[in-house]
Image (cartoon, rainbow, N blue to C red; front, top):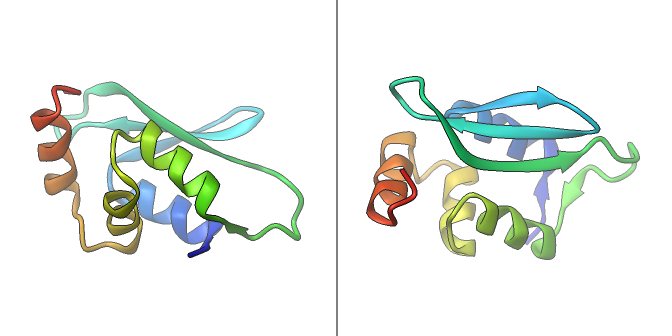
Length: 95
């Protein structure tokens, strides 16, 4: 169940993650109220031929975002919106 890296990055940004440029592309979640959180994930600049991210790395990104694999797929494929994501984080005592 690979996903396009650019689509993942775009989806994260549309859900409240801001990109910081470092050795990797680090995405840090900011709440709807603009508060920085400890929730973050990253993608690699990597080789241009690697344009997609496979299940093992998607699973790691899900864990970093405090979601299970299915929830993370819903976050990047858009059925899970920002408000619902933030509710999940609150319910799991992350926020």
